[in-house]
Length: 234
Image (cartoon, one colour):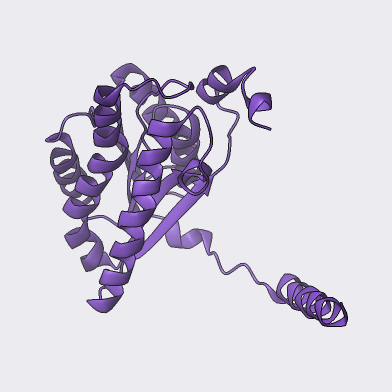
Protein backbone atom coordinates (compact mmCIF):
# COMPACT_ATOMS: atom_id res chain seq x y z
CA UNK A 1 0.00 0.00 0.00
CA UNK A 2 2.83 2.37 0.90
CA UNK A 3 4.51 1.67 -2.45
CA UNK A 4 1.26 2.39 -4.28
CA UNK A 5 0.82 5.63 -2.35
CA UNK A 6 4.39 6.67 -3.15
CA UNK A 7 3.81 5.93 -6.83
CA UNK A 8 0.66 8.07 -6.86
CA UNK A 9 2.56 10.89 -5.17
CA UNK A 10 5.36 10.74 -7.75
CA UNK A 11 2.85 10.68 -10.62
CA UNK A 12 1.00 13.63 -9.09
CA UNK A 13 4.18 15.66 -8.78
CA UNK A 14 5.13 14.78 -12.37
CA UNK A 15 1.69 15.87 -13.60
CA UNK A 16 1.97 19.19 -11.76
CA UNK A 17 5.45 19.77 -13.18
CA UNK A 18 4.18 19.17 -16.72
CA UNK A 19 1.17 21.43 -16.15
CA UNK A 20 3.25 24.36 -14.88
CA UNK A 21 6.24 23.95 -17.21
CA UNK A 22 4.25 23.41 -20.40
CA UNK A 23 4.62 26.19 -22.94
CA UNK A 24 2.53 26.51 -26.07
CA UNK A 25 5.08 26.83 -28.88
CA UNK A 26 2.51 27.31 -31.64
CA UNK A 27 3.21 30.39 -33.74
CA UNK A 28 0.13 31.59 -35.67
CA UNK A 29 2.36 33.29 -38.19
CA UNK A 30 3.73 29.91 -39.26
CA UNK A 31 0.41 29.16 -41.01
CA UNK A 32 0.34 32.39 -42.98
CA UNK A 33 0.60 31.32 -46.61
CA UNK A 34 0.77 27.62 -45.67
CA UNK A 35 -0.45 25.33 -48.45
CA UNK A 36 -3.24 23.14 -47.11
CA UNK A 37 -5.26 20.33 -48.67
CA UNK A 38 -8.35 19.57 -46.56
CA UNK A 39 -10.80 16.77 -47.30
CA UNK A 40 -14.36 16.49 -45.98
CA UNK A 41 -14.53 20.27 -45.91
CA UNK A 42 -18.21 20.85 -46.69
CA UNK A 43 -19.57 20.64 -43.13
CA UNK A 44 -18.91 19.53 -39.57
CA UNK A 45 -15.34 19.23 -38.35
CA UNK A 46 -13.83 19.78 -41.80
CA UNK A 47 -15.73 23.01 -42.35
CA UNK A 48 -14.60 24.40 -39.00
CA UNK A 49 -10.98 23.42 -39.66
CA UNK A 50 -11.17 25.25 -42.98
CA UNK A 51 -12.25 28.42 -41.17
CA UNK A 52 -9.42 28.12 -38.65
CA UNK A 53 -6.82 27.74 -41.39
CA UNK A 54 -8.41 30.70 -43.18
CA UNK A 55 -8.13 32.94 -40.10
CA UNK A 56 -4.40 32.19 -39.99
CA UNK A 57 -4.02 33.25 -43.62
CA UNK A 58 -3.40 29.84 -45.16
CA UNK A 59 -3.89 28.84 -48.80
CA UNK A 60 -6.49 26.09 -48.92
CA UNK A 61 -7.79 23.50 -51.34
CA UNK A 62 -11.15 22.24 -50.10
CA UNK A 63 -12.76 19.02 -51.23
CA UNK A 64 -16.02 17.15 -50.68
CA UNK A 65 -18.84 15.76 -52.83
CA UNK A 66 -21.28 18.71 -52.72
CA UNK A 67 -20.22 21.59 -54.96
CA UNK A 68 -22.83 24.12 -53.81
CA UNK A 69 -21.80 23.73 -50.16
CA UNK A 70 -18.10 23.85 -51.03
CA UNK A 71 -18.65 27.15 -52.82
CA UNK A 72 -20.13 28.66 -49.64
CA UNK A 73 -17.28 27.35 -47.46
CA UNK A 74 -14.73 28.68 -49.95
CA UNK A 75 -16.36 32.12 -49.95
CA UNK A 76 -16.34 32.29 -46.16
CA UNK A 77 -12.69 31.20 -46.03
CA UNK A 78 -11.78 34.14 -48.26
CA UNK A 79 -13.82 36.47 -46.05
CA UNK A 80 -11.98 35.21 -42.96
CA UNK A 81 -8.56 35.92 -44.43
CA UNK A 82 -7.42 32.93 -46.45
CA UNK A 83 -4.73 34.02 -48.90
CA UNK A 84 -6.23 31.61 -51.41
CA UNK A 85 -9.16 29.21 -51.36
CA UNK A 86 -10.27 26.89 -54.15
CA UNK A 87 -12.30 23.71 -54.21
CA UNK A 88 -12.28 20.35 -55.97
CA UNK A 89 -15.42 18.22 -56.09
CA UNK A 90 -14.52 14.58 -55.45
CA UNK A 91 -16.15 11.35 -54.35
CA UNK A 92 -13.63 9.27 -52.41
CA UNK A 93 -15.54 6.09 -53.23
CA UNK A 94 -13.80 6.35 -56.61
CA UNK A 95 -10.27 4.85 -56.55
CA UNK A 96 -9.07 7.36 -59.16
CA UNK A 97 -10.08 10.54 -57.32
CA UNK A 98 -7.28 10.76 -54.70
CA UNK A 99 -4.48 11.07 -57.25
CA UNK A 100 -6.45 13.64 -59.27
CA UNK A 101 -7.10 15.67 -56.13
CA UNK A 102 -3.47 15.73 -54.99
CA UNK A 103 -2.33 16.71 -58.48
CA UNK A 104 -4.89 19.54 -58.58
CA UNK A 105 -3.91 20.81 -55.11
CA UNK A 106 -0.19 20.73 -55.88
CA UNK A 107 -0.71 22.63 -59.12
CA UNK A 108 -2.99 25.22 -57.52
CA UNK A 109 -0.75 25.85 -54.50
CA UNK A 110 2.69 25.12 -55.93
CA UNK A 111 3.25 22.34 -53.40
CA UNK A 112 1.80 21.14 -50.11
CA UNK A 113 2.65 21.87 -46.48
CA UNK A 114 -0.34 20.24 -44.79
CA UNK A 115 -2.60 17.41 -45.92
CA UNK A 116 -5.58 16.99 -43.60
CA UNK A 117 -7.60 13.81 -44.21
CA UNK A 118 -11.00 14.17 -42.62
CA UNK A 119 -13.71 12.78 -44.92
CA UNK A 120 -15.90 9.81 -43.98
CA UNK A 121 -18.55 7.72 -45.66
CA UNK A 122 -22.05 7.48 -44.22
CA UNK A 123 -22.63 4.37 -42.14
CA UNK A 124 -25.73 3.39 -40.16
CA UNK A 125 -25.53 3.41 -36.38
CA UNK A 126 -26.87 -0.08 -35.81
CA UNK A 127 -25.92 -3.64 -34.94
CA UNK A 128 -23.96 -5.61 -37.53
CA UNK A 129 -26.37 -7.33 -39.92
CA UNK A 130 -23.87 -8.87 -42.31
CA UNK A 131 -23.77 -6.21 -45.05
CA UNK A 132 -20.31 -6.99 -46.40
CA UNK A 133 -20.82 -4.88 -49.53
CA UNK A 134 -21.35 -1.79 -47.38
CA UNK A 135 -18.20 -2.60 -45.42
CA UNK A 136 -16.18 -2.86 -48.65
CA UNK A 137 -17.52 0.50 -49.80
CA UNK A 138 -16.81 2.09 -46.41
CA UNK A 139 -13.26 0.74 -46.39
CA UNK A 140 -12.69 2.41 -49.77
CA UNK A 141 -13.93 5.78 -48.52
CA UNK A 142 -12.62 5.75 -44.94
CA UNK A 143 -9.36 3.83 -45.40
CA UNK A 144 -8.13 3.08 -48.91
CA UNK A 145 -8.71 6.65 -50.12
CA UNK A 146 -6.71 7.92 -47.11
CA UNK A 147 -3.84 5.64 -48.05
CA UNK A 148 -4.04 6.72 -51.70
CA UNK A 149 -4.15 10.42 -50.83
CA UNK A 150 -1.22 10.14 -48.44
CA UNK A 151 0.82 8.11 -50.92
CA UNK A 152 0.24 10.65 -53.69
CA UNK A 153 1.10 13.56 -51.38
CA UNK A 154 4.25 12.14 -49.76
CA UNK A 155 6.70 13.50 -52.37
CA UNK A 156 5.34 17.04 -51.96
CA UNK A 157 5.32 16.76 -48.16
CA UNK A 158 8.89 15.44 -48.17
CA UNK A 159 9.98 18.44 -50.20
CA UNK A 160 8.31 20.91 -47.81
CA UNK A 161 9.01 18.89 -44.63
CA UNK A 162 5.28 19.07 -44.17
CA UNK A 163 2.60 17.45 -42.07
CA UNK A 164 0.00 14.76 -42.66
CA UNK A 165 -2.99 14.95 -40.33
CA UNK A 166 -5.33 11.95 -40.15
CA UNK A 167 -8.65 12.55 -38.39
CA UNK A 168 -9.70 9.30 -36.78
CA UNK A 169 -12.01 8.36 -33.93
CA UNK A 170 -12.06 6.88 -30.46
CA UNK A 171 -13.93 4.05 -32.20
CA UNK A 172 -10.57 3.26 -33.79
CA UNK A 173 -9.08 2.65 -30.35
CA UNK A 174 -11.99 1.17 -28.37
CA UNK A 175 -14.48 -1.31 -29.80
CA UNK A 176 -18.08 -0.23 -29.24
CA UNK A 177 -21.46 -1.56 -30.40
CA UNK A 178 -23.43 -0.18 -33.36
CA UNK A 179 -20.34 0.93 -35.32
CA UNK A 180 -18.58 -2.28 -36.39
CA UNK A 181 -17.90 -1.24 -40.05
CA UNK A 182 -16.93 2.32 -39.09
CA UNK A 183 -14.74 1.08 -36.23
CA UNK A 184 -12.95 -1.36 -38.55
CA UNK A 185 -11.98 1.44 -40.92
CA UNK A 186 -10.65 3.58 -38.07
CA UNK A 187 -8.61 0.76 -36.52
CA UNK A 188 -7.10 0.25 -39.97
CA UNK A 189 -6.03 3.91 -40.09
CA UNK A 190 -4.06 3.62 -36.87
CA UNK A 191 -2.34 0.44 -38.02
CA UNK A 192 -1.30 1.83 -41.38
CA UNK A 193 -0.31 5.37 -40.46
CA UNK A 194 1.37 4.30 -37.23
CA UNK A 195 3.58 1.96 -39.25
CA UNK A 196 4.15 4.59 -41.94
CA UNK A 197 5.35 7.06 -39.31
CA UNK A 198 8.07 4.64 -38.22
CA UNK A 199 9.09 3.94 -41.82
CA UNK A 200 9.45 7.64 -42.59
CA UNK A 201 11.74 8.04 -39.57
CA UNK A 202 13.81 5.06 -40.75
CA UNK A 203 14.10 6.71 -44.18
CA UNK A 204 15.05 10.03 -42.53
CA UNK A 205 12.16 11.82 -44.21
CA UNK A 206 10.99 14.83 -42.26
CA UNK A 207 7.23 14.36 -42.59
CA UNK A 208 5.09 14.67 -39.49
CA UNK A 209 2.13 12.29 -39.12
CA UNK A 210 -0.55 13.15 -36.56
CA UNK A 211 -3.50 10.88 -35.84
CA UNK A 212 -6.40 12.61 -34.10
CA UNK A 213 -8.67 10.29 -32.09
CA UNK A 214 -11.90 12.20 -31.54
CA UNK A 215 -14.78 11.25 -29.32
CA UNK A 216 -18.43 11.95 -30.08
CA UNK A 217 -18.71 15.45 -31.57
CA UNK A 218 -22.06 17.23 -31.56
CA UNK A 219 -22.29 17.60 -35.31
CA UNK A 220 -25.76 17.30 -36.80
CA UNK A 221 -25.09 13.91 -38.40
CA UNK A 222 -23.52 12.41 -35.27
CA UNK A 223 -26.30 13.52 -32.96
CA UNK A 224 -29.07 12.36 -35.30
CA UNK A 225 -27.53 8.88 -35.55
CA UNK A 226 -26.77 8.32 -31.88
CA UNK A 227 -29.84 9.87 -30.30
CA UNK A 228 -31.57 7.34 -28.08
CA UNK A 229 -28.82 4.71 -28.49
CA UNK A 230 -25.81 6.10 -26.62
CA UNK A 231 -27.40 5.34 -23.24
CA UNK A 232 -27.79 1.68 -24.28
CA UNK A 233 -24.00 1.26 -24.43
CA UNK A 234 -23.45 2.39 -20.84
